[in-house]
Length: 108
Image (cartoon, rainbow, N blue to C red):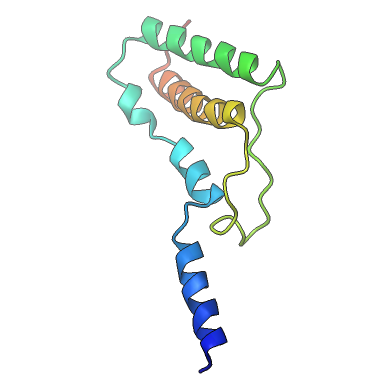
């Protein structure tokens, strides 16, 4: 093995440890069980507030997950803007709240 091969192996190992976009997207998906202890009216209000904030952050377009080429997610850096990252986290929370609301048949 040449020095060049060793450098490539070390660089590959270091880069694979970086937080890729896929791990960030996975962190945005959260369990709805954490919202089951919140009263229905409060949960509906929190969800509506999160949806309004997402709309503000995305200029009314709503949040859409970025299209990441299959297999490259762990290696690509998170290239989203700060607003997109914040909207993504809020979208994950809003989706979880919606699942809890639907499961408990809350009205609002």
